[in-house]
Amino acid sequence: MKINKYSFVICLLIIGLGLRAQTPALQVGITAGSGTVWLDKAFLMKGTPLFLSGILVESPIKTSISIIPKPKALILNAFWGEFEAPVHQIFGITATGKFQIVKFKSLSINSLAEFGVCYAPFPYRVATNYTNNLIGSYLNVLGGGGFEIQWAVSGKLSLSAGAKVLHISNGEFQKPNDGLNFISYPVTLKYNITTSEKPLIEISKTLKKHSFELFLSYALREVKALQPKKFAVVSGSAAYFRKIVHNWQLGISTDLFFDANNAAGYVLNPQGSKLQAGFSGMWKLNFDKLSIEQGIGYYVYNKNSDRSNTYNRLNIKWNIKPIFLVLSYNRHQGSGYYLGYGLGYKLVQ
Image (cartoon, rainbow, N blue to C red; front, side, top):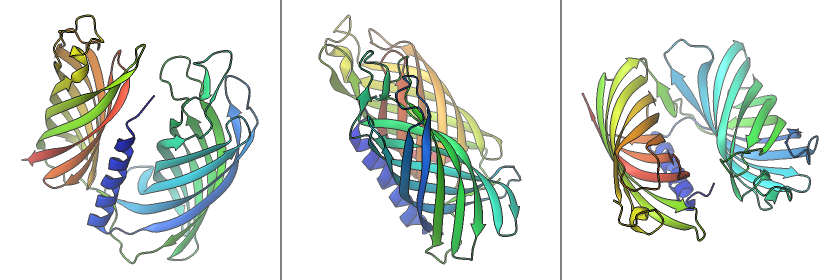
């Protein structure tokens, strides 16, 4: 999977703007731990030890909804990992959701859900099968989860230890997708650097019943051929959402895609239309400033495209009312994945 490098810069800017606008309560910390590669289908690294270390920023999540596990914090983590040959080092950035399971005075047990990207300076491919990769590209997707036990030493200082199971994609979404799986045992020390008690994200029951949104996004999509080439994709969406329960909404979106590839000779008919149009059903989870939505769509107009008739999208939106910034993760069946970014406007009733 090859991703437009500028998309990650835009994503970090979105996070930075949100932090600056909110001036939330923040903790900074350092983390270190060991681990073991517990499964890879090539059996080249099973049992290989590893070492992980990193720095993190954590802000609390405030919610008035009684659910277990209870959302407690969002953690942004930059880490470095040391494997034995043939993978060697990895560097990554992840976002982790922390959910409180139970609390006893100064002790709490939390579950963790983690997602991010990592950079591997020494990507490794199995010689007998070029697509059967451990870490097959310089940029790879990272995801997983685990738990931690946290001890609040004081109002400013906390210490935690736990375990996480993580998977690093091999850079390909085609089968086989082996990647690399490992378990780590991190120990984290955190210090509260602010006096603010304002959370970065606030989950409340007060959500408008109806909302209407418009947004535009831009991306570069690589077409795999004898000579791979990137083409611009500009998309526009008009979506209607209705509240279902708490902070959840369902909606429908009308989507237009202008794809420069469709008249570039990479399809059966180079005179094909650059324009595609479709409808998608959406679900959406809203926070105070952040919203996450995912939709599956069907093209009603898709003349002579190299795409099939279905598509799906995952949008992360940062709200600066009444506008919002968008990071969009797109998959169009038959044409792979790509990241886009854009700007939108929200009308709320």
